[in-house]
Structures are given as C-alpha cells and as structure tokens.
Image 1 (cartoon, one colour):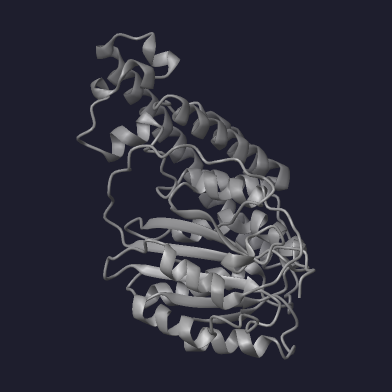
Image 2 (cartoon, one colour; image 1 turned 135 degrees about the horizontal axis):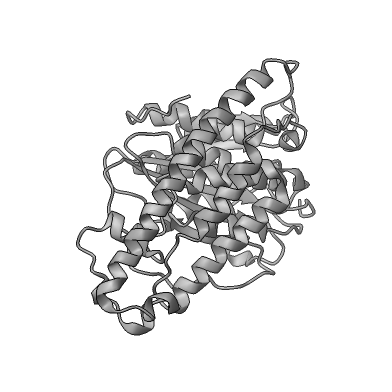
Length: 386
C-alpha cells in the first residue's frame, strides 16, 4: 500500500533519506576496547506511511534513550544501525529496503541521519527488512552481547510474498537476536495481530504506540537548563581534532548535531549535553583527548604532520602532549559541573512531575524502546538503573 508518509520509529537512533545522499566521512582508526558488555541495536523504519510524528518523536527522544544506556556500569559498547524500508525511491529488487547506517558507535552520525530523514510512499516488506538486518550486519559475537532489532510501521506485516515472517523469526533465534515490533496505530486494529505474532515467533516484544505522544508530553523547565547549555558549548572547546579532513568533518558534524538538537527544543539540547558528558559518547577516532584517555599505547608523536590540527602544528612535538593533557583536565572539570547540575535537574523534574496529572495515553516511541531494552538487557545480566 504505497502512499504512506515515511517514517516509523527510530530510536536509538535513525536514518537518512534516499534523496539526501551525502556520504559519511571515511572511517578513522578503531577506538580502543572497553570492558562493558556489547549492545547492538538495529532500527528498521517504515518510510512509506503516515507517521511523520514518529520521526519527530525520534528526534526529540534519541538522547533520552541513549542516556538510559549510559547509566549501565561498566559502560557498555553501544552500536546502532539504521535501515529504511518502503520508500518509493528504494530499489524494488531489494524489496524497497536499504541499510542507511552500519552498526556504529558514532552517535553524532546517527542523529545526523535522523535529521536528514524525509518521506515518500511505498511498499512495506517487514520480513525483508528484518532479514536484511539479520544477515547483513556484523553482529557482536560476544556470548553475553545484547542484540536487538526494532521494526516499526503500521501496514500489514505479511505483505512480503517471497520472505515469510516465520522464516525470518527462525534466523533471529539462531543468531540470538531479539526482534521487537512496534505497531504505530490503533491497538484494536486487526493489523496489529500480525506484528504481535511476528515478535512472539522471533522471541522479542511487541509494542503499540501513539507516534505523536512525544510532542504532547509535558516539558519541564528547570533552574539548571541555561547553565547546562553554556557548559555544553564550553565542552566543545576541549576537543582536539586529528586525522586531517576526516577529523575536521567529524568535529563539524558534532557542532551541526548540537544545532539540530537546539532547533528541536532546549530539552533535547540538554539531553544531548548529558549524552556528550557520558562514557557512551566516544570520539577516539577524531579527538586526541578521548584517544589518549582510552588507548594507553597511543603516542601523539606517531601522527603525521598532516594529521594534526592547526593548533598542534604550531607547537613543538614535546609540547603537544601537555596541550592535550590540559584540554583533558578542562573537560574533566566541566564534566563534574555537568554531572552535578544534571543530578539537581533530575531531582527538580521528579518533584515537578508529581504535580502533573497522570496520563492514560498510549505508550510513546521512547517509552516502548526503553521498556523493551530494559527487560531484554536483564536476560544478559545487564541492569539499567532507574
């Protein structure tokens, strides 16, 4: 049924329109390993239907979802992938499915894709996009890894006449991947049963959501908001770029996603600030502060002159390490301030929310993802604090 505005649920990030085709920067050196468990999340979005509200909900709530995961100790290795399916411009031979973003820990790139999202009609093949995500992605092979797929939409889930839901569910169970479905429509609609059955067959969870709920939720302003936004700007000045054009592009993308978050709302910008202050926000591939912190074997002297930023080129080789250490100390001081303000802000919001009337509306996009991730994480011994 090709004529549904495009966009169904992302989470955790998100994706790019076929009409906006700018290639991502070339990959930089792999970041150092961390000790936490691996969490891989693939978001499969129906880009054909009347779900513009879901795109907006994803933009508003991506950082909230990530901030939940940032509470996990030790810090997990989070990677996010984004698929779109059902858009008119996609290749019919591929089942109108396209991988927009491979599994990555670059959260700025995820948010960039989400903000580039556009809409257009199409045919929605739920089984095909899920099969593609299962077979095409290099899922973590760690035995304790949490591997999740979220498939979002509101058309009949059994439109695919070549690939069956049952066959895809079998692949998911063999690979140890939870396939979760999010139906964006009336809970009582007959179509919802197929989405529910698919999740059950694949060992995942089913959710029914109000795609517009995030835009109607109460947003509470706090006394800490203004200072947090100022600290976010100051934090950006502590990043020391390396890697030539690739590093410059990633630093520019950081600023661009700050701007996108600010345009969405002050609350989104603050949620992004909290994410940037967490251990999940890693910029090892282009920022020397993170690289030196997370890679004990790394030596700035190993970088070629063309890989250095202009500010480092002006310094003598022996001065460069001290320069980065100074920036690291500045960032640590800012982190402490942000942590303190974030805790006070959370307390203030908690008290104010007690004064708000209880809502009986359908679950929103972020609530569906956060609830499902929390439950399934527990099966891997991963506890997400409240």
